[in-house]
Length: 258
Image (cartoon, rainbow, N blue to C red):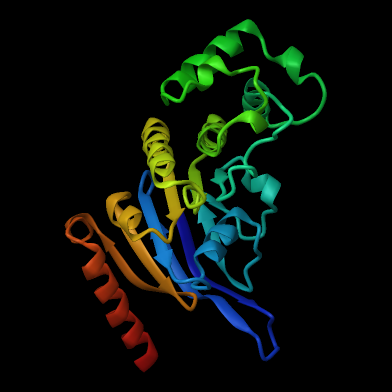
């Protein structure tokens, strides 16, 4: 479960350029729910994820993950509860380490010397079996450097690394946006597999309206730091790109009149 209560965050406070990235956002996300967040640039989508991850400190409000109130926890302390996959396939892995070393690093939650010695035969076999399920041939490239992988392969590796420590929450910040459509489809299929296998509470930020409609069981639309639209279930299932654009226009008009 994730709960935000009265979350507020402004950038450039007190200046003419002050911008409200989160404007009194209150939100409950049930355990195991897959929530997609869309909105225009500057709407507050990434700030929402960064606040949950601890990268951005709230000006006001509270954040709870599971039974823990984490509002003032630093990033490293929240790492036991959540994992992130970012937009750039180069950010989620260490390019100079091999595939299996990256996986060992994720599993051990510690960097440093001796990773090679930490990779036992049993671990290598387990990593191969884990990667084989994604159908990208990564199980045969365990000793290849992560930097030699394609963008899609590396993003799937980052995804697998993210869920290895059994977090409660998975945060996906435009994690398929930098990929071509075919590769993005592969990564999204891998995402669904990983989320289902671990029963994660998931928040996925995207600009892709097709993805917003197709994936997840709940959709949030943000603008100017506020949630303008919150749909789930059959209402979400009936959405099309055209109806979503229209819902956004109507919600935006209501906000301007408020």
